[in-house]
Image (cartoon, rainbow, N blue to C red; front, top):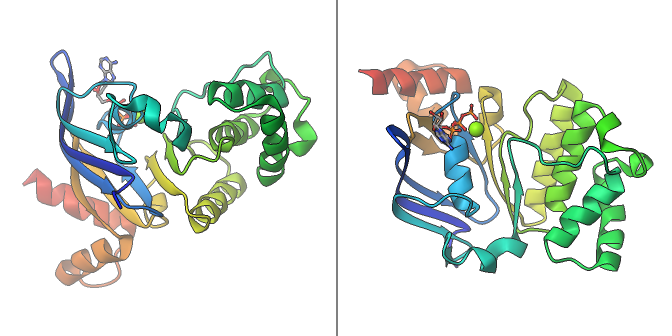
Length: 248
Ligand SMILES: Nc1ncnc2c1ncn2[C@@H]1O[C@H](COP(=O)(O)OP(=O)(O)OP(=O)(O)O)[C@@H](O)[C@H]1O
Ligand SMILES: [Mg+2]
């Protein structure tokens, strides 16, 4: 079976800016793959190419076995995208937002209503279903944004900075959801600035200047650094180690 996400030699420029400068990436089924890196390193550009919103300049992008963006339509119902700029309707209620996103993903109204009840329970938002989104706190909006992404039960989740600015309790909750989704057989590709999140992924790719500089399971990367430095390096130390090595 093919990997849910496969990229080979992918390049994307915006005028003189080379946002993605030759990326090979394979995200296996059931993986929680974390693209980790500072601002402006090309994480969102990479994600947008996977979701078929941007076309690569060179290379190959395959998602769930289909070339993207050429066969984007064929994967739409199987992919859930949570954009970095959260796309919720402030003037609609929690439930109406779910209805809207469900219809966008080709679901029928009664199917959405049934599924919305489940997902609102899962995300602990059921008591807020009639509330206007504009009046919700940032954390609740973020939970709703994830709920909208999960509504149509996509097998592949592409989440752009899903945990940014969450308070510690909600952060913990999001990670519990991710591991629960993984246990149910979903594949997750997410981006983050937070190095402490890297250790929670099953595979991490450190991005720098449009490239995946190094990747592997957290324990494997830690072992590589420990061989040189000794001790038990944190993910921050692992990131710094590879960043310095590249800098030479
Ligand atoms: N539509 C665009 N037009 C012009 N430049 C762009 C566009 N989108 C991204 N860029 C540039 O490409 C580079 C990579 O941007 P990108 O948004 O992919 O980075 P990122 O890693 O997601 O950053 P952040 O962590 O801040 O979200 C940046 O220099 C950015 O300014
Ligand atoms: Mg980004």
